[in-house]
Image (cartoon, rainbow, N blue to C red; front, top):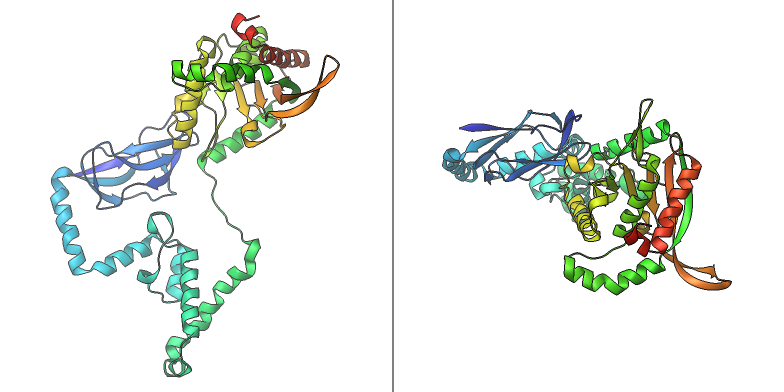
Length: 417
């Protein structure tokens, strides 16, 4: 019995998705709930599991195709049909092993690659594919043609004369790689933007066009936090099972500052201002697909260990593409740390509809004046970008100073003073 593998229900406000990667090919045996294909929305990558045990049949939507909810991606032959499928596969190599493989390779090629192969009458069985899943790319074809040209140079002149028809295509093959070599360092590639990257672009432009963004800066002496961390990090990890980093201090300092300046924790909805009585802190995380901002819910009620553990989990699952839609939506304030990449100072962009975002930067030793003396201290620049429509400059500056004071005297975080 044949079962349809369909696109699962998409998150609210998401109308379509893109097929990213097929993990199984037609004829492969699959188990129930095994991931068959990844599809990408503008927020997350969704896995499509197998609805039953069986053998994967026809793939109806190829990688790069746009799909909608409930659209059929492929067919699946149930477990009962598995022996028949295997028998069919066993007979196939005996009847026509090479044509089947060749035809599949030809079908998987892009139009430009297929045209290049057909124009030069190339044997695709001799071309080694380096693309995803062993697919043959244009570069593979050009390299193969160049290798053939090299081998033809050593051919005796007598052969060239006796096999004139075979020698004729040689100049064509020699001409093809030439533009590639001539281009050299000026090579260009056109790659479609992923849905996540498109969404990031839209949101950043939206933030610039709809908010009156200003940025205020300050600097913080990280020595007290670094001393406290060095003193207790081993005991902290042993007790709580997670490492003590800097982010928990910044999250706690931000929460305390947000309590004192509620406008920074607010958002605009039309002509209304919404003041949030909770503190959901978005933590910007870099992933292979782009920047994502999972949300630390009710941060005011979490311990330092809870904060560190959740942020570490966010980072791991962001790299694996396992974050859910719920974890990426909402948030009343965000923190981004460009310092892990070496940034000394930058102006972060708002994450709509939030009204402010805190930017952390690289910790760098600098000479500072303390009590009339020049001393070396590990300093960090802080940046607060805010929406001037609802946050006044005075509030923004005092908010950032509050964070600075909390970090330079960590005891104040525990005492909430």
